[in-house]
Amino acid sequence: MQSIEEFSELSLYIDDLVRQAAELDVRIDICDNFKELQELVETTEGRAPLTPVFDWRYSNISSENGFWIKGTSSSGQLVHMQAARIDTTEGKSLADYLREQASLYLSPHIPAIAEQSTFDTCWWMRESKGKVCYHGEIWISPHDGFRGRGLARILPRIVPPIAYRKWQPDCFYGMMAPKLAERGMSAQYGYSHYHPLGIRWKLRDGNGTFDEYVAWSTPDDMVALMESYKAQASYNPPDNQAAKRKGISI
Image (cartoon, rainbow, N blue to C red; front, side, top):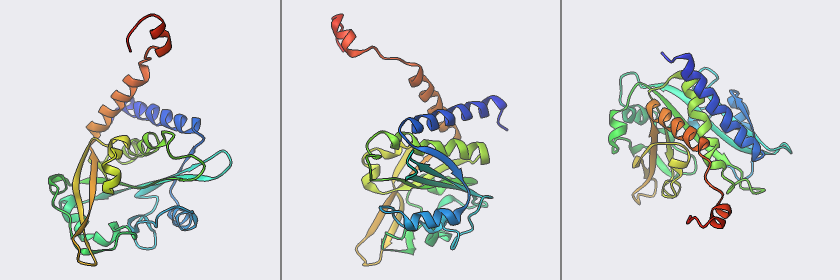
């Protein structure tokens, strides 16, 4: 059971992330209408297709077990989306649970055979079970300069504390393309651990696999991230120019 103080800390952390997003012209709304998410994804330029696990037409997803974030600019432009859902593995490992639901987690842009793919190469996938929060669909608009202004370090970090306050899961996790993971995006998104062989999707053409990284954090990791975040926020580094004028080496 979480104390009032811990939930208060989560709220302050969320509020500060939302404030930082607003300073970069992104207003955050928490939504639970997944039909709206599906329609927005299908009509938004530059947005990859929705993964079935977040598509109400294929998956059991609603306000009972999921929410999503919509970010809009001051001009009303849609500039950001991401989503989360809670599931219970019912005594199975996360690897076995995902194997049984394989087609729901296969992104439409990956030309793979879900049923012939591998889910248990990573030790963490074999050992994790219980209440698991899946975090995905992270997208920032490629238009009007919204990428490259630091939003990738702010927006994805909003979801885990909201999910923890709502569901108290045993872990948070998501899948990531290698080109993103190799640029350090799992750390930017606030995840403490990653493994290069999360899901090994068997390619339809028979030419091996497309390997998605799995990134994950525990509730303890999230608390540590919040502590680090607070420490960084309270530290005011010296002004470089002022320091140089005083002869201090920076």
